[in-house]
Image 1 (cartoon, rainbow, N blue to C red):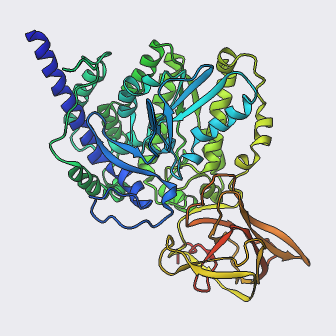
Image 2 (tube, one colour):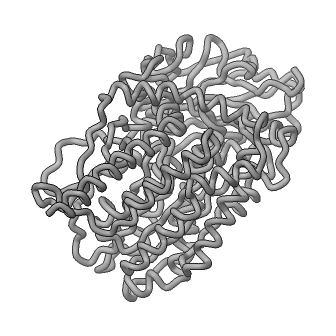
Length: 561
């Protein structure tokens, strides 16, 4: 009896250490939660400096709640659900798997969850691929997006041993590494990190939680002494780390970062996760996240290529270190390995492609998420996973898949990132403007000074014509459109050689939602445009076009100005 009491006491202490360690992680990594939530107008209520939504709140439906084992979790806003269900990435999931269903669980951080929301995440696109491939088959696939903003390999390992195993997954897809690097970079006391890692490792190595007083078999609950407001204040104070990690060059060395990564335990977590899942007979796909920086990166080179502020030394270390760890772990265990770095390197050779692939310095656009989902799908096809578990269902070829999902494969042809134009962006004058069936109104979700143009009669297209003054500008030209679901199109044409020719277009698939306010689309003026370009903009259905005063089209600030 005394022995059991002592063991329970030790476990309670260990659980407290888990929460303390993950609070330590949160103090380092809180920026990933706070900055993302704050940027979407969803900062925790207690966080200092919280502001009303600057963008469409539909884009990121999460709030942060304290959790006794994980430090915090994201609570998804969902209607009341009946029965034994779980909430993941905006939808309910029945804990009990349906018959004739192959369940795939995708774990990771915000790069898995989806920065623009779960509907454009790679798990959502992977689900669409399986829906297409298995249409009419008796066996179906269910892809669960279990990504959580700000989580790292510790969270993945703990969750897999507890809540995720209750889902009875047939396969895990894991993409960790980015938040591990960003968290490890902020460690100031390596020895203390090693000590806390040891306590946490001891707890997660326990295969079966000891029953609590009620015999439930759950981990003992630990209620933090500080309330939610204190936790949120901590996340708010940590938000300054986003700026700090851009100035890390002052102390950065690869050797120092490698020591911090080892102290943090990334490699051990990855190996343990694969080993523990395989011991239960569950295969794993290990995904190496493709970083935005290139192998020959330098601050000078990347300043011209990447449209976002990037800590080049830290990101360059991250791409090499995490790739080496993940590849070695997959090779040693026989786990399937998907490497996105070659894709990113190939597609970011041209400066404009960076806008299409990344929404900021770390998060993929829908186009790159599509390519990631397709790589995972093809890896499962090549490995025999589909053949072994999905019977003789005919699976479309890669070419057939791209043709059927052409919107996703070709998405972003004119996409140019997000956020409204602001300095150093410069407006381009549009003169001799003529409008038909268009009216301008205010938009509460847009920053002050921005208004929207839309058709007065939605049943008819609205048209604007004018002369765009380029004055020698040969670079990208941007504008800010918005659509509801697939109910409309924004078409931009130029008159060249006496004929109207499409130079840009905004359309989207059936999401059932508005596009986020502030997304940018664009085009590069034709070589024979000269100093002026006659343009025609057609808005149909739900289409909107934002303007700031008389300014509709914008260009970036030239280098050196």
